[in-house]
Image (cartoon, rainbow, N blue to C red; front, top):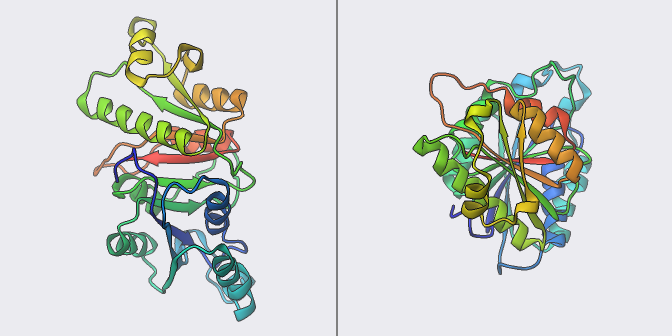
Length: 273
Protein backbone atom coordinates (compact mmCIF):
# COMPACT_ATOMS: atom_id res chain seq x y z
CA UNK A 1 0.00 0.00 0.00
CA UNK A 2 1.09 3.55 -0.69
CA UNK A 3 1.33 5.05 2.81
CA UNK A 4 -0.10 8.32 1.45
CA UNK A 5 -3.42 6.67 0.66
CA UNK A 6 -6.40 6.07 2.89
CA UNK A 7 -7.03 2.35 3.56
CA UNK A 8 -9.72 0.92 1.29
CA UNK A 9 -9.39 -2.71 2.39
CA UNK A 10 -8.77 -3.87 5.96
CA UNK A 11 -8.15 -7.40 7.20
CA UNK A 12 -9.47 -7.74 10.75
CA UNK A 13 -8.37 -10.71 12.82
CA UNK A 14 -11.02 -11.96 15.25
CA UNK A 15 -10.10 -14.67 17.74
CA UNK A 16 -13.43 -16.31 18.73
CA UNK A 17 -11.82 -17.49 21.96
CA UNK A 18 -11.85 -13.85 23.05
CA UNK A 19 -15.16 -12.57 24.43
CA UNK A 20 -15.15 -9.30 22.49
CA UNK A 21 -13.80 -8.87 18.93
CA UNK A 22 -11.85 -5.76 19.85
CA UNK A 23 -10.29 -5.08 16.44
CA UNK A 24 -13.62 -5.42 14.64
CA UNK A 25 -15.42 -3.01 16.96
CA UNK A 26 -12.52 -0.56 16.67
CA UNK A 27 -12.61 -0.69 12.87
CA UNK A 28 -16.35 -0.04 12.75
CA UNK A 29 -16.21 2.81 15.28
CA UNK A 30 -13.19 4.38 13.57
CA UNK A 31 -15.01 4.29 10.24
CA UNK A 32 -17.81 6.33 11.82
CA UNK A 33 -15.39 8.88 13.27
CA UNK A 34 -13.15 9.34 10.23
CA UNK A 35 -14.09 11.63 7.31
CA UNK A 36 -15.43 9.79 4.24
CA UNK A 37 -12.26 10.08 2.18
CA UNK A 38 -12.93 7.02 0.06
CA UNK A 39 -16.15 5.79 -1.46
CA UNK A 40 -15.78 2.20 -0.28
CA UNK A 41 -13.92 0.60 2.60
CA UNK A 42 -14.20 -3.16 2.72
CA UNK A 43 -13.72 -5.02 5.99
CA UNK A 44 -12.47 -8.58 5.57
CA UNK A 45 -13.08 -10.51 8.78
CA UNK A 46 -10.99 -13.59 9.58
CA UNK A 47 -12.11 -15.75 12.51
CA UNK A 48 -9.13 -17.82 13.62
CA UNK A 49 -8.04 -19.07 17.04
CA UNK A 50 -4.53 -18.21 18.22
CA UNK A 51 -3.80 -21.72 19.52
CA UNK A 52 -0.43 -20.67 20.97
CA UNK A 53 -2.13 -18.26 23.39
CA UNK A 54 -5.37 -20.17 24.04
CA UNK A 55 -6.38 -22.92 26.41
CA UNK A 56 -7.91 -25.36 23.94
CA UNK A 57 -9.18 -27.82 26.53
CA UNK A 58 -12.90 -28.59 26.44
CA UNK A 59 -13.24 -27.24 29.98
CA UNK A 60 -12.41 -23.73 28.75
CA UNK A 61 -15.82 -22.08 28.26
CA UNK A 62 -14.32 -19.52 25.88
CA UNK A 63 -13.69 -22.29 23.36
CA UNK A 64 -17.44 -22.69 22.86
CA UNK A 65 -19.34 -20.01 20.95
CA UNK A 66 -23.01 -20.20 20.05
CA UNK A 67 -25.10 -18.54 17.38
CA UNK A 68 -26.08 -15.72 19.70
CA UNK A 69 -22.44 -14.68 20.25
CA UNK A 70 -21.79 -14.77 16.51
CA UNK A 71 -24.86 -12.67 15.73
CA UNK A 72 -24.31 -10.13 18.52
CA UNK A 73 -20.55 -9.72 18.23
CA UNK A 74 -19.93 -10.23 14.51
CA UNK A 75 -22.92 -10.04 12.18
CA UNK A 76 -25.12 -7.37 13.79
CA UNK A 77 -22.32 -4.76 14.12
CA UNK A 78 -21.25 -5.42 10.53
CA UNK A 79 -24.76 -5.18 9.14
CA UNK A 80 -25.47 -2.00 11.07
CA UNK A 81 -22.22 -0.38 9.95
CA UNK A 82 -23.28 -0.04 6.34
CA UNK A 83 -19.75 -0.99 5.26
CA UNK A 84 -19.02 -3.67 2.68
CA UNK A 85 -17.63 -6.78 4.36
CA UNK A 86 -16.74 -10.44 4.03
CA UNK A 87 -16.42 -13.07 6.76
CA UNK A 88 -14.37 -16.27 6.68
CA UNK A 89 -13.28 -18.83 9.25
CA UNK A 90 -10.14 -20.89 9.66
CA UNK A 91 -9.83 -24.12 11.64
CA UNK A 92 -6.08 -24.35 11.09
CA UNK A 93 -3.75 -24.56 14.09
CA UNK A 94 -1.36 -22.42 12.01
CA UNK A 95 -2.72 -19.03 13.08
CA UNK A 96 0.07 -17.13 11.34
CA UNK A 97 -0.45 -19.07 8.12
CA UNK A 98 -4.18 -18.37 8.21
CA UNK A 99 -3.59 -14.62 8.44
CA UNK A 100 -0.93 -14.60 5.73
CA UNK A 101 -3.21 -16.68 3.48
CA UNK A 102 -6.11 -14.27 4.00
CA UNK A 103 -3.76 -11.36 3.37
CA UNK A 104 -2.69 -12.82 0.02
CA UNK A 105 -6.32 -13.35 -0.99
CA UNK A 106 -7.62 -9.93 0.02
CA UNK A 107 -4.46 -7.82 -0.40
CA UNK A 108 -5.45 -5.48 2.45
CA UNK A 109 -4.03 -2.03 3.03
CA UNK A 110 -4.06 -2.67 6.76
CA UNK A 111 -4.19 -5.65 9.14
CA UNK A 112 -5.85 -5.10 12.52
CA UNK A 113 -4.80 -7.36 15.36
CA UNK A 114 -6.30 -7.32 18.88
CA UNK A 115 -4.27 -7.17 22.07
CA UNK A 116 -6.74 -8.37 24.66
CA UNK A 117 -4.93 -8.48 27.99
CA UNK A 118 -2.27 -6.20 29.43
CA UNK A 119 0.45 -8.34 30.94
CA UNK A 120 3.08 -7.60 33.56
CA UNK A 121 5.99 -5.50 32.24
CA UNK A 122 8.43 -8.41 32.18
CA UNK A 123 6.11 -10.86 30.50
CA UNK A 124 5.97 -11.46 26.77
CA UNK A 125 3.03 -9.99 24.90
CA UNK A 126 3.75 -11.39 21.44
CA UNK A 127 4.42 -15.03 20.70
CA UNK A 128 6.56 -16.22 17.80
CA UNK A 129 3.58 -16.28 15.42
CA UNK A 130 2.75 -12.63 16.08
CA UNK A 131 6.35 -11.54 15.66
CA UNK A 132 6.62 -13.49 12.46
CA UNK A 133 3.50 -11.71 11.20
CA UNK A 134 4.81 -8.28 12.17
CA UNK A 135 8.09 -8.88 10.38
CA UNK A 136 6.77 -10.50 7.20
CA UNK A 137 3.33 -9.00 6.52
CA UNK A 138 3.22 -6.91 3.37
CA UNK A 139 0.69 -4.57 5.01
CA UNK A 140 1.09 -2.42 8.13
CA UNK A 141 -0.25 -4.11 11.27
CA UNK A 142 -2.32 -2.15 13.77
CA UNK A 143 -2.20 -3.58 17.30
CA UNK A 144 -5.44 -2.57 19.02
CA UNK A 145 -5.33 -2.14 22.79
CA UNK A 146 -8.32 -2.43 25.14
CA UNK A 147 -9.64 0.97 26.21
CA UNK A 148 -7.41 2.89 23.81
CA UNK A 149 -8.64 6.11 22.14
CA UNK A 150 -10.67 5.59 18.98
CA UNK A 151 -10.02 9.04 17.56
CA UNK A 152 -6.78 9.86 15.77
CA UNK A 153 -6.16 13.46 16.81
CA UNK A 154 -2.59 13.09 18.15
CA UNK A 155 -0.29 10.80 16.17
CA UNK A 156 3.26 10.14 17.33
CA UNK A 157 5.72 8.79 14.76
CA UNK A 158 8.94 7.30 16.15
CA UNK A 159 12.00 7.56 13.88
CA UNK A 160 15.73 6.93 14.02
CA UNK A 161 17.20 9.64 11.82
CA UNK A 162 20.76 9.30 13.12
CA UNK A 163 21.19 5.95 11.36
CA UNK A 164 22.70 6.27 7.90
CA UNK A 165 21.71 2.77 6.80
CA UNK A 166 19.49 2.91 3.70
CA UNK A 167 16.93 0.49 5.12
CA UNK A 168 16.52 2.59 8.26
CA UNK A 169 16.13 5.76 6.22
CA UNK A 170 13.50 4.17 4.02
CA UNK A 171 11.68 2.90 7.09
CA UNK A 172 11.77 6.42 8.56
CA UNK A 173 10.17 7.76 5.39
CA UNK A 174 7.41 5.15 5.53
CA UNK A 175 6.71 5.87 9.20
CA UNK A 176 6.45 9.62 8.68
CA UNK A 177 4.36 9.26 5.53
CA UNK A 178 1.87 6.98 7.27
CA UNK A 179 1.74 9.23 10.32
CA UNK A 180 1.18 12.34 8.19
CA UNK A 181 -1.60 10.72 6.17
CA UNK A 182 -3.33 9.46 9.31
CA UNK A 183 -3.21 12.95 10.80
CA UNK A 184 -4.59 14.53 7.62
CA UNK A 185 -7.36 11.98 7.29
CA UNK A 186 -8.51 12.67 10.86
CA UNK A 187 -7.78 16.40 11.13
CA UNK A 188 -5.15 15.56 13.73
CA UNK A 189 -1.58 16.58 14.54
CA UNK A 190 1.56 14.68 13.69
CA UNK A 191 4.36 14.66 16.26
CA UNK A 192 7.83 13.16 15.79
CA UNK A 193 10.00 11.54 18.45
CA UNK A 194 13.63 10.48 18.03
CA UNK A 195 15.47 8.80 20.90
CA UNK A 196 19.25 8.54 21.13
CA UNK A 197 21.69 6.99 23.58
CA UNK A 198 25.05 8.38 22.49
CA UNK A 199 25.62 12.16 22.74
CA UNK A 200 28.25 11.79 20.02
CA UNK A 201 25.50 10.56 17.71
CA UNK A 202 22.98 13.30 18.48
CA UNK A 203 20.19 13.48 15.86
CA UNK A 204 20.20 16.55 13.65
CA UNK A 205 17.04 18.33 14.82
CA UNK A 206 17.05 20.81 11.92
CA UNK A 207 17.39 17.99 9.40
CA UNK A 208 14.59 16.13 11.16
CA UNK A 209 12.29 19.15 10.82
CA UNK A 210 13.23 19.57 7.17
CA UNK A 211 12.79 15.91 6.21
CA UNK A 212 9.51 15.41 8.07
CA UNK A 213 8.03 18.86 7.34
CA UNK A 214 6.82 18.98 10.94
CA UNK A 215 7.16 22.22 12.88
CA UNK A 216 9.93 22.15 15.51
CA UNK A 217 7.51 22.49 18.43
CA UNK A 218 6.16 19.04 17.62
CA UNK A 219 9.56 17.36 17.34
CA UNK A 220 11.05 15.63 20.41
CA UNK A 221 14.72 14.62 20.47
CA UNK A 222 15.43 12.95 23.80
CA UNK A 223 18.25 10.93 25.32
CA UNK A 224 17.40 7.50 26.69
CA UNK A 225 16.29 4.02 25.76
CA UNK A 226 13.88 4.14 22.79
CA UNK A 227 11.06 2.32 24.60
CA UNK A 228 11.20 4.72 27.56
CA UNK A 229 11.49 7.84 25.42
CA UNK A 230 8.72 6.88 23.01
CA UNK A 231 6.33 5.73 25.74
CA UNK A 232 6.94 8.77 27.95
CA UNK A 233 6.45 11.14 25.02
CA UNK A 234 3.25 9.37 23.96
CA UNK A 235 1.85 9.54 27.49
CA UNK A 236 2.74 13.21 27.91
CA UNK A 237 0.99 14.03 24.63
CA UNK A 238 -1.96 11.73 25.34
CA UNK A 239 -1.25 10.25 21.92
CA UNK A 240 -4.06 8.37 20.20
CA UNK A 241 -1.70 6.37 17.98
CA UNK A 242 2.00 5.51 17.85
CA UNK A 243 3.60 4.62 14.52
CA UNK A 244 6.65 2.37 14.84
CA UNK A 245 9.00 0.66 12.43
CA UNK A 246 9.66 -3.09 12.50
CA UNK A 247 12.57 -4.37 10.45
CA UNK A 248 12.27 -7.58 8.47
CA UNK A 249 14.42 -10.36 9.90
CA UNK A 250 14.69 -13.99 8.93
CA UNK A 251 17.19 -15.08 11.58
CA UNK A 252 15.39 -13.76 14.66
CA UNK A 253 11.69 -12.99 14.84
CA UNK A 254 11.46 -11.50 18.29
CA UNK A 255 12.05 -7.90 19.29
CA UNK A 256 11.97 -6.07 22.60
CA UNK A 257 11.37 -2.36 21.99
CA UNK A 258 7.89 -2.66 20.51
CA UNK A 259 6.69 -5.00 23.25
CA UNK A 260 8.04 -2.75 25.98
CA UNK A 261 6.34 0.29 24.46
CA UNK A 262 2.97 -1.45 24.30
CA UNK A 263 3.11 -2.32 28.00
CA UNK A 264 3.75 1.34 28.87
CA UNK A 265 1.08 3.11 26.80
CA UNK A 266 -2.69 3.03 26.50
CA UNK A 267 -3.02 3.77 22.79
CA UNK A 268 -2.98 1.67 19.65
CA UNK A 269 0.35 0.98 17.93
CA UNK A 270 0.81 0.80 14.17
CA UNK A 271 3.73 -1.35 13.01
CA UNK A 272 5.32 -0.50 9.65
CA UNK A 273 7.51 -3.21 8.11
